[in-house]
Length: 300
Image (cartoon, rainbow, N blue to C red; front, side, top):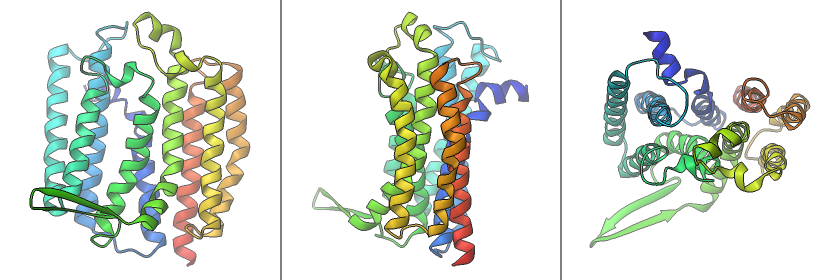
């Protein structure tokens, strides 16, 4: 039963949320910001369960149109989704109580987007938006929420309601820093989705799922390679801008194995073999960046 559950929620793919979390945690450590343990733990639990929930929903819906089978009876599989959703929502509300309305609104948007990813009249997964949506929500929103709940109030933005008017003020420099910091997880996450859609292109067309590779055709492979170079460029820019310590430049050396994996995938796009090049590249890039950020915190 446990094995079936882990397969249902695709536990092996959860690196996209965990690494983004660890990278942001490393940045807090590097800048010497005190970490609010209760809020951080509640956020991690809610984030992780939300990730499990969206994957379960995705698999539950997809098995209606493809040849895959669920590890449980459909009734039980649906019950798992309800349980995960309720647990994630409860943790999200708890975190909002511990923090503020910005976290509540952001969490609500995350849950809504997760549900609409595979459910509704025009699911996001059947449009050329999967890479963008997954990249933003796993690569940007996770670091944003973790940093937001741990940084001083009003550091990134302020949101207020006065006389029925909602006013939001965004602090530019901190937000630009956050955006740059999020480039690596956004790009690496988007490329896992892109590689998956490239490998599944023919199968997706049969079930009327027209993802980004359907529109880009051969250019999707160039995009796959280019996204990694954008990630490396962002790291260099952050060091130049003194957002990150120069030791983080060591993470750029990972371009050697990453380039090898890129060539492997460009030569052959197969789900059972070369697709894992995108996952390996994620672990290599995010692992090296996260490690060097933590090391930066130790030597400064």
